[in-house]
Image 1 (cartoon, each protein chain N blue to C red):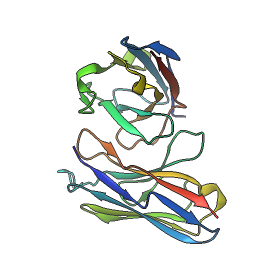
Image 2: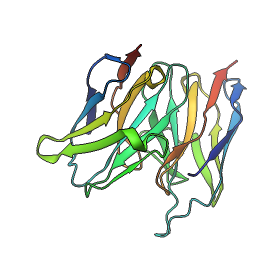
Image 3: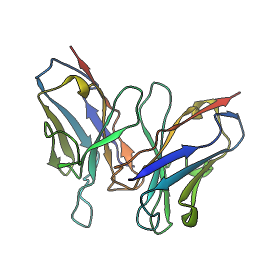
Length: 112
Length: 114
């Protein structure tokens, strides 16, 4: 099974600060159809997860454009350009290229 | 509007079988797959399995021997069954749409009692 290594496990940021989260895969997430199914989710406290970014860099509808994703192959990054208070929660990367799909272990974002 | 809703028992005895239903609306199960995900208290997300739009399934390697996912497309329902429950199966169980996971249910909290 694919292992996703997510770092850092926790992140503390002030409002307006830019932060990045890394997700590294144990094997390439490039699908045979040419797509890369690496997505980013946010789980706010007490809520269900929500999709932020899909297929590496595509912003889900309704998600603020301060969120962006990049990467290819085995290395991926989520960036928040100017953290806001509502961004607190746990961020997960998830791969949908190789079944069984797998999640990263999560990054908890705290607001200072 | 795309919606998913999990339903099932809140409390299950150890060694018994868990049965959960995911009822979807706003899309067809013949066009989208449905994934089950669970989250033990205070822990991260665990991918359990998927039923694809063609009815095929894939399962988490660690759960494969006791997990099955089926569906009734006419009722827009997906079913999860997992047997031989243990206390560490206590979790919130979510269903979510397809491999992009762009819509989630509110989750069903399940406690396994010994």
